[in-house]
Length: 300
Image 1 (cartoon, rainbow, N blue to C red):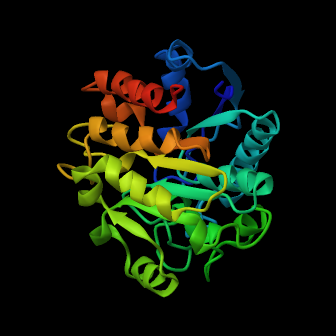
Image 2: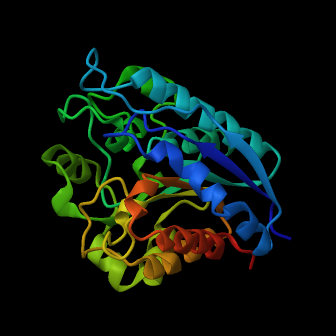
């Protein structure tokens, strides 16, 4: 029997570049996500949402904007995921931006200290408030998980153990290396972080997912999906519109996500950076995305 599935909403754009992602959980529910997951054969419990947070410019802390709100959202995700894991359920977290992955891993490593993270994203998210000037914490999450120099202390401290993750617990799938900052490239080389390129994921999604899974620990596992990994022309979903005509289509990504979520180690899937307004001219893509989640999380 498959585990029950708990759905957690994390309606926050506090750490983002602009508002939008805070509406994703609501929109996906309104379009029938919960019913689709149940129709696929899962017993689904909707645990509701954490704090609703809408981005606004933080002129007092321009290089780590809305840090206190980000910490609150991460802690809320961690608490809800921990409760679900304690009931022996799997979890679907609807962000929100990519900082939700920190809350997921805070809870999952408390449950299983060796837990791994498959991070499906066009970016490494290894920046810090000192390495970049834009102040958006949503592309700094894994710098805080790894406790890199220059990370914001209040966020690192909120994650429990430090570092939250070791390099052996992490695999990046679908990265556009040319989009990485020089700081990120230096950290990838210094730490020996394993990663797969966007083009490789697009060419062989199932094979690259299986390769990634082989490199993660034999322990509980979370999968984080930043929808900016997708070809934006095929699937206009992401806050970032940079991924035009590159990366996997939604159909091809669906194959990789299915491979990851049917792995025996799987416990949590989190979704980040989905901005429903991007789909205004092509609304069917939101239903296609729900179909992707249904396929990934169906039993068997």
